[in-house]
Image (cartoon, rainbow, N blue to C red):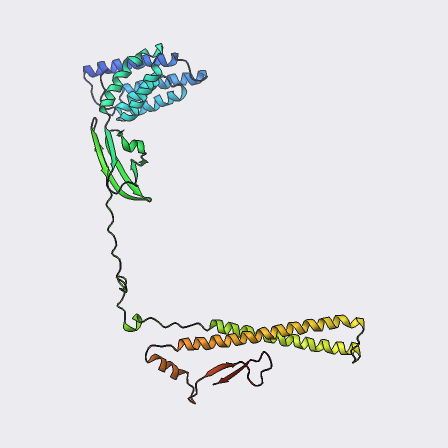
Length: 372
């Protein structure tokens, strides 16, 4: 059977075209008879077989009228009920006339395999070899190779990623345009459209240009777009220790001292209760033991709180003094200005110092002397 023209072609057919159409109808009718006579792959109901028979006849009529797209839909519906060599052959016929050469070639090959050894498919066996040979010469071939910079890129053909086997050989494609893309890290870096005609072969090499390396910034140079640095901003700022730790330690020490004073007051009340129970001598009745234990507890808590409070106050004062000294390390001229600002109207500088054993110190030998 001679190769038919595109299925979309319409118009008045000459006498030879009418003879070809008549032969196509007779062949399709024969294939339809083989379809209904072939044994089913599964048990179908009489209704399903009757519906498939009607669909097949409709497909034959549509194919004869050059409406291959509608005919193909009918033949696919028949294949869902019974997939015989004749049905596969008709599907391939429609696909080939619609330009779907790769799919048509695959269906022709499946029809040939299904018809082998089946006496009811002699018509398929007699025609399918020539169809396969014709399409193998008409199907375009596209070879895609990796070039410079594309070793790790993901290569896609018409939106489908290609594997190693496809990248190492020729890919059969349908005639027409095809889009080749390359992606690195999810970003598309190459996109190219190639168009192939029937029987043509083409090789495309994917190359990805290396992005220009960014120039390393010169040491000490400002970033692009930054305003020029002034002499004051170029000089490193002097370290200025924060006064927050000193204030926190000072506050904690005061709080602990206050808590110690509270427990001292509770201790004094407990001692008064103990004196009343013991009658002023050192011999106390057993009922006085809980009061004595409570007094010892208050004494221990008061001593610990006052000791920690004194240590915290001392640490806070040291931290505050250190932060003031750090702030006084200036550039030339700035230290004198800050020192003058700290002076009071009388010309005296505020000063605080910690004396380890100052006169009048009653706890841990610490005292604070200050002049403001």
